[in-house]
Length: 200
Ligand SMILES: [Zn+2]
Image (tube, rainbow, N blue to C red):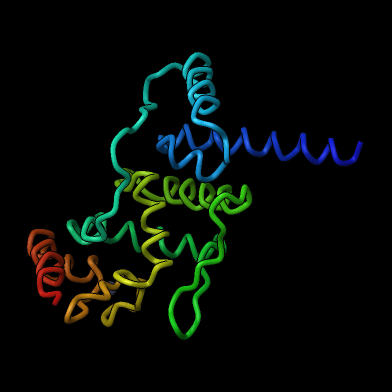
């Protein structure tokens, strides 16, 4: 009885997570990655979700998942919100900060990690209006920070706030908010782009 109870609970958690991911407009591939449900099962869940909540506001995304780190440096708002999201990943326990940088503390396919990812994204949505980063870009941000090849975090030399660090750029600029306050949003955008293009 105990085993079947546990299995029931896991199935329930799996479906809850899938529905949460559908609400965040995650791609079918992403939902499968985190829940282990089949594409067919996900399609049926999506249809039943739309039938009970209406299709308005929920879209299914097709095509490739985001994979360009440059996205996080194209606009000061995106850059600022991505840094906030990165700190929420740390707060939620998905990333762990140590002297060497950030270490991933999640497992793809774990219902617990998937739930934490949703919690971090939902906290981000609560804090930002309008929120400019989609769930898929949030998941990509977590992946890119975990890989530590192109993206890291550091402290802004000016305000001390957390900022995204382009690990391939020659120099580190102040955070998007400081640059924006100092030179204006347009120049801040150019500075961000310039720091990327200065990468070797
Ligand atoms: Zn700053």
